[in-house]
Image (cartoon, rainbow, N blue to C red; front, side, top):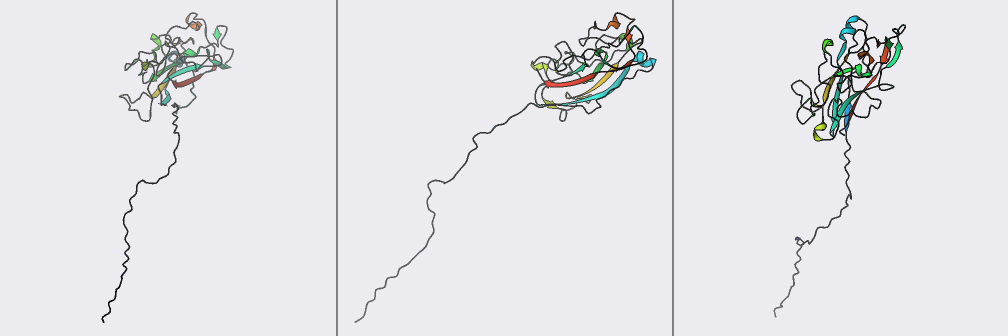
Length: 262
């Protein structure tokens, strides 16, 4: 009899197939708040010497005065609208400080009360943000110094004050900008580092300052006057020619103040 054998073969197969996924598993952390503080930046650089000397030791210097050309350079960078002004000051904020008296003091008619306004300034370039795009509409120091024979009291006289951080008023001189917060009364933010120069080689953020003192003979300082361009009553020399400046050494301070337009 033939035997019939039954065999069972178990086949085992291992295969890998994609397992369906229903969502990606992740974890996270969050920064709850991001703060950015942008502080106003006002930067004024003066790479030139902080000391300027005028020595009057001959007749020509008395008659013709002494001019210090480009004695001060000012470089401005600002992130906000700004104004720039110059202010003369001293211990009393009105007259020069007498540091030394020469000889007998010049006699009975000599006085040591020399007003700060005898210092004249001339700026390059003009106050460009006077009224919109026009120049020269606000008082500034861009006028040339008048020759001794045709002087105008106070045309270039420095603004002076007992409180030097109180800005000039609307009728007084600024180097750039003006009193008030209207759009035309302040220079926009920018920097001398990136501003394109104009035809004269200057930018709205770079200034050079000339200084002049004109004593006259006798020393009555005929060019001095109020910063508004008017004759100054305090200068007795203008009304009394017998009064003149006492020989000696005098000192004052000049501050250049850069501030946010206000």
